[in-house]
Figure (tube, rainbow, N blue to C red):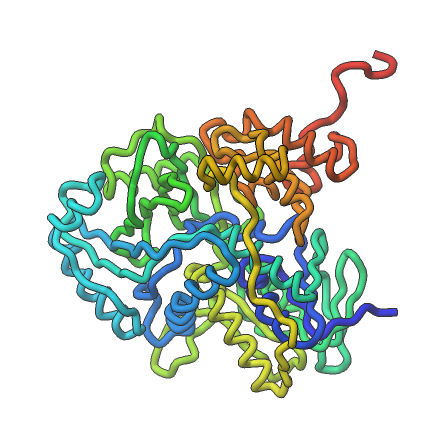
Length: 495
């Protein structure tokens, strides 16, 4: 008997997870499938964690509308889901008079997009606000609605809230094809079996072109991975207080220097089109490029303060803008195609996809209603997802009280980030259980400090094995093919 759902969401990045959470508000069954061992392992997992104000996208584009509307929604979303978000604003920094003149064009573009709270600052104002800035700064565009967030936290909290409200999440579940009845999608095929649905929603990110082609939609559409590399700095050695963008070029927003919610400074990304949708390797040329670009904004950066590096892939698409008179070939695709029934098609959701995600979810719901769906709010729908205790954020009295309630919160496993055994165990038994080292890392920030997991990894493997009731040999870093251990080194038979 085919297991049937009203809505199946394909892809567990931020867009898929937030859409799933939006749909869980209404009567009807919802399934989210993700091919990896956890949600938030694709493009969402490797970005700059910035909620863009909306002055950068081309006026009249869907990308611009989703960015500005999405930005407006973040305060409410963060309040309901209790994930960290700070509306610090951001700066587009000009070095020299020629770049300063370009800021006027950018601020006018922002006004056309409806971005509030923008103004031009002179060089001395910028230097007073950011002591590490290049002293040759001539000015900056200041946008007060820009923000910083934890992209793991919003994705996980949205998906968890969906699960609490009745949605189902299936991990290690890869989409393979659609089940069709004429021109209507009635289900999907996966490596875990077939599932029926009335609506399939394509949120497959880098693979959104593959999914839509399986449905017979937009054969000309193509996703090209656009790689961006980053350096992460020890927060004890360098402190940047603000989000610092360079003046943008035809290649994009440029290589920026920014703080994070966790206090680390990060620099990047570059922008390199590649062929392989799984290639997240760092390159010498790419890292040299971001180092040179970041030096233009903050000359005092030192390589000895780097504690990590990573690369992410953005789904760079060739979707045309639908606004008449605008020749723009890299807009978002958010549509219900006429030629295929029961299909919501999303594609090319690159930056500012993180900022846009709640607006995209809102748009999808509106499209479903326009298509004849009667969406009735559940009487028991709960928009609130309570965050779990974080030892590093507690004062001494709160810590003492927490340890009395559960002594495991008194055992620090990650010294750099002050993550305790109690927090790790809570994540293993959460609504979407963390079953790998990286899943724990995404939820607690464990392993992201100066030692990069060198101290905590053996203890985390031990805790995971104990709580999951498996051998330590079965614990992985990020799923199949990433085993930590191959065999015991002592007491091995025949040795």
